[in-house]
Length: 115
Length: 334
Image (cartoon, rainbow over all chains, first blue to last red; front, side, top):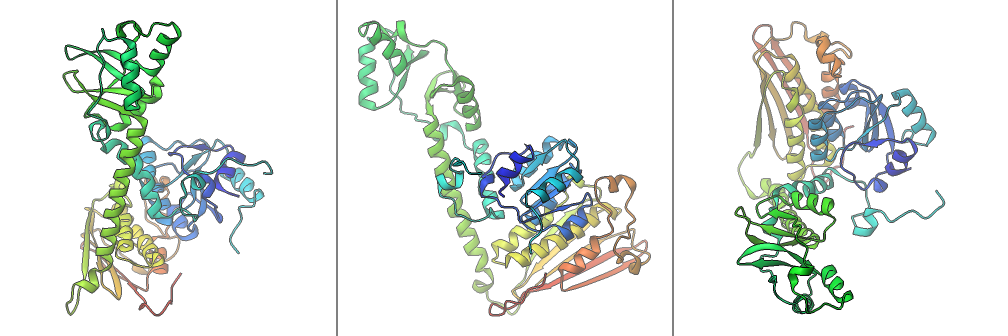
């Protein structure tokens, strides 16, 4: 399951500039709104699902090199956050759905955890 | 997904078939950056053929054919009057009016860009006007050149190539730093002044340190561990200190030492702050997702050695160290 398919299947809105999503293959996922927990739990190429939408998610996502950040419940990152994400090559996606639902759908799509 | 999917960007452009790395991400956003940095005059064609209003259309056809171009600006007494393009010439041919003057068939509605505009302006104008070529004028409205989408592509590719060579050179130089400079003890020190409550710049130092380490040729896993540890330390200065502090990273061939020093408030009970989940962060800061009480726990997990010294009312010093295994050993933590 590549990121392009995930974006289509979950009807996610791409907030940052488009990239070659087909070539990005997330290997797992992590959800938390606590940044230090994300630092500890998320790994490179994971999808990070969160309700947080402020600037600091970009630094965390960038350092971890996550595949994408899914911002749930229509929380809206501001222009500075999106600009920063573009600068750092971080993909921000948005959805009106809740974190719980997105996690469930991702699991169903086969985005689970690496063995 | 049984139906054939369209070719990906990667397949078309032959990007290396592997997940996009930090480095690639820089290259991608670099194109965006370049569209703001590069000026129209750096990529446009300055030496342009022109037509005059009273010239017959047939003469324009000849200019277009011999120069293999698709349109020319129309000038009278050095003043721009319009543009005549291959489409206009085709209209004249259809009417059997190739001997008619240019003024009858040219397009008077001019879409222009300024020579010192960034090329992103030209890209917007191309999208809005659906034109294939734009007239470039100087600040006095005089013809300065013509620009096509092809000019922009070529300009960006040349700039990227230039950038790529520079980055390769930088990496090469940086990665040989420790071999080229001989001393009894060579260290490279990076210092960052971190301001208290400056959440906007949160992660600035850590992402730059991580990049610097990668340039120096550090193992990506080590660069990542340093990045995470330094991020937590950086955020601690932002969240908890009175006046911010100094974050220092000292790189040596065999180890990386990172430290933060601040002048207060100091930690009353160090054992307590080392417990997972313990946090003194304010409600406001917690709302932003900080204050999980995991900062120091994360640091400890990422580094080989961590030390905290603190005095209430005086300040705190946090020292973190990561050992770099020698080339022939592949031992890795995490």
